Length: 316
Image (cartoon, rainbow, N blue to C red; front, side):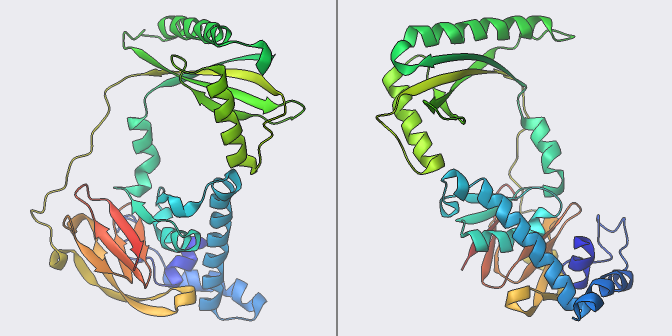
């Protein structure tokens, strides 16, 4: 497993998994990995590195699917890490994709739960109405969205066990396609200001980003009208971390040898994330441990802690 591989390569501390509440057995991990190593005729360490590289490659392909294959250059973006294992792989993934930087938020292992807390409730309403661009006007579009708004407002009042008086805000999108196409492209719309020409221009631009070409002379079809009704609710706020009780010296827990695959074996400093002060910086290789995750900073990368306690990893 990946956990076995990370344990064997030195990334994970067997005595600090889940802040020490779970103990990992390195020898058992090696025995499990030996089955793979013997079949391949390689050492246990080489097998562990191969497992990690295979997982990294799978993640990179998934990231390319939602970036490069949708017309986005990863070099224009920041990679935000989620999940307990994400921070261990992020350094390698970010380097391969060439992102501007990598951000590891607080408590990455709880990132999905945090997302549920800060996400405002939303309901989506759709109306399919196939219309050629030359036969639809902005007033027709506004009427379609007005009908969806009324549906959203009725649903908001009647479908909740305890109806909320909180205000709704609305977002508008339209699926469009070239005549004869099967797949459509979704375009956001400013319903108060947009004209049909504005929507068509945005569609041509979006189509080119997704499919690398545009067909300005080809008739366009409006396919589906989408309205999102968002309920504004109080959300938890992030606070700045205090330097009190935090220092580079207090955070340092020691060092251990880590196998970094292409970069080889290196002695990495081990740091406790909860004790890192704001504006702390250090070059890799580093291991930053916390209860819900372990962050790996590769050789040739730089770590910085911002005033929210988020970790930023960049190439030096």
